[in-house]
Structure formats: structure tokens, C-alpha cells
Length: 275
Image (cartoon, rainbow, N blue to C red; front, side, top):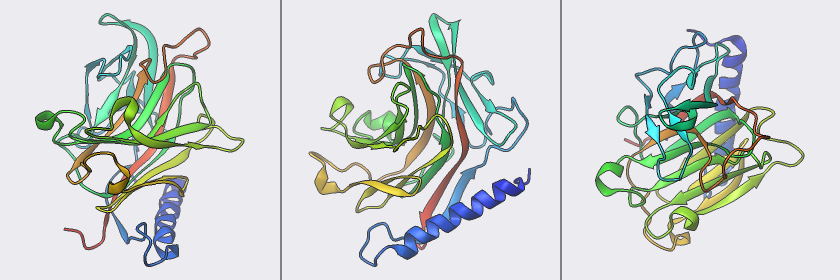
């Protein structure tokens, strides 16, 4: 399906913003790159359609190591296109296979994996205590090395009870879980659940750089970590909405459900000249 006129305009504006980041940076700035688009999903299609099977697979199950309360399914009720150019990942309060909530977790594992590059998504967050959406990367060698040796890069995590704050974090051997290395970004007089915002990571062999709406807010270099830099191999993308878990606690009566994270697009770039 062809992009709607406004979607084409957004794509052009985003490309211009990426070009501006490169053009405006000084020659010594690690963020100066000629980024070229290599993978994308614009989530165009009819309402209720599952995300493209050529690009995404479902992780089906529960409690991925964070004491989460939801059962992640492969149903359109939990992850499907909304017909307006977005992917909706929806957390619901319902009994399902021994759990009281359902949601979804989709990944590009085995379909698209890349080392380094610019990873970007335009997202509107859900809200409410106990709601925990994320856009993140996990090392493709996770099945052989285990976590955290495979490495994890959280491009953005959001706690539904803190609507003006997102987190960018890395996890690796010696700095995982509550010992992860990262920083939060706070919106001034605004919230992440009332409109779309762009979250990006620029990853090179020299650094990891986090952006919100093209504002750089964190840089991590190998020397900043207390142990090994494990960001030297392909990672895959994950989009999910968790319910509960140690990071956010359980929902309560004030938590509005169902709640959806809306993703307008996910795009991945590679530095020009990289094989």
C-alpha cells in the first residue's frame, strides 16, 4: 500500500532530520554519519491485520524474567494494525492460561538482525500504573551465550505511572538488571501518552547515543562500562507492552485497560560504506 500524503511527508521530514544530525555535527562528533535506510515497517494495512510475518514473529508465553503478569499472545486482539497507519500492541485485563492480563511481544529475531546503525521508532505510549512498554534490542546470540552476556540495549522504556519520563539503558555482564547503565529523559510540561514521539539509538563501534525527538540525551562509550562492551555483534528488535513486573509493580484500580502502545513506524539505518 502506498503511503498516505501525510505519511510521505513524515518520511521526508525524518530523512531530513537524520541528514541534519549528520550535517550539523562537527567532523569529530561520533554522531556524524551518512545514514542509509536498510529496513522499515510503516504499519500500513487494514485494521485487525497482524504485523507482517516477513518482518515480525511473536514471542508467546509469560514472565520473561521480570516477574511480569501478562500472557503474551499471537492474537490480533493484542497486536494488530489499527487501519490508521499504526501498529497497536494492546494490554488487556482478561483471564488467559492462568494469567489475569494479556498483551504481546513481537521481535525480528531470525528475520532482521544487525550490528550498529540507527534504530528509530515513532511511538505513542499507553499509560497507567503497572504498564511497561518498550522498544529495545537483544543480542542475536542470546540462545547460545544467555543473558546478559548477549547484551541488551533499551532504546526506550516507559513506566505508565510516570508519563513524562522514558529510560534508555544497556545491560551486559557485570551491569545488568538493577545494575544496568542508563539515564532518563524527562519531557518539560508534556507527556509521552498524549502524542507521538520519536525514539532513536545511534550505535557505532565507539559509542551508543540515545535521542528523543532528535534531542541527544545520553552517550555511552566502552570506557563508561564497568565490564565488557558486548555491543559488537548483531541484535534484533523487540516491541512489547508488559503488565506488572519489578520495574513498575502491578496495575491497580486506577489503571485504564485495555491500553495500547501505538507505533507509527520502525526504521533502521546503516552507515554508508558499511558492508
